[in-house]
Structures are given as structure tokens and as C-alpha cells.
Length: 134
Image (cartoon, rainbow, N blue to C red; front, side):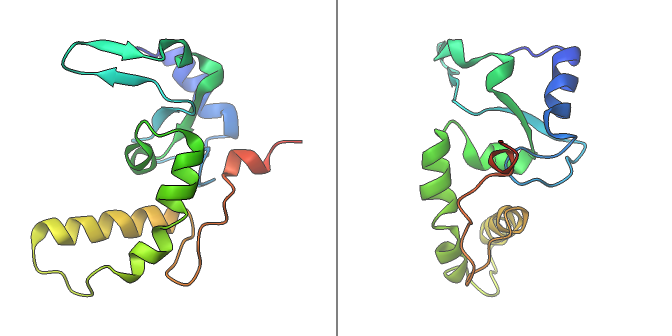
């Protein structure tokens, strides 16, 4: 869905150039995420929950975080994907040999790094943008 350059800049500055979820400085390939998802059907070129496509529902985030979250609702992302990530890190192979496994491990380790998650340190349960609320 189209987002103008002007609106992308407004979204980027919502949190001072930081990722809404991790609080890390946005990388050049940052993306816009819909906090409440907009779900696209690529086969029929239709959109579900199109009313969620508004600037108030959009936040800046790291590309890998947007990819990992996908079209999940925020609480599902928080509890299922991030809440159990520290346990999944424990099960990663130490020295994967297959390219797919190497990439998967690097991907999960990068997501974990951005959220300061370690095998013995689970996700705090709080996103950066939530720490800024009065």
C-alpha cells in the first residue's frame, strides 16, 4: 500500500528516528509497520482490515523486525514470537552446516539482539514505544 515520502518522513520521526519496537536507531532499509495489521491477499490483490492503513497506526521499524512480526497482532507478536524466543535460541544448532540453517540462526540471533533477548534473558514484554507513553 502506498505511503508518500512526506508521510514516511513523519512516521520515521515519530520516535526520533528509532524503531518503535526495539528503540534502536533505524537502519537505512527501515520499513513502516502497521501496529494493528493490514493483511494483503497477493493472489486476489485485495486487502483485509484496510481501515488500519492510516498514519496513526503506522510506526517505523527495522526491516527484520517488520519481517518477523509479519501481519501478527501486537500481543501475539509480543507473547508468542518474542516471549518464547529465548527458549528457541537454546535449541539453535551450535555449528549449522546447511545454508538454510545458517541463515535461520543468523536471522533469529539478529532479532534477539535487537530486543536484547538471550537464552537466559527473555523479552521484557515491553516495546520501546510503550516506554514513551505518559
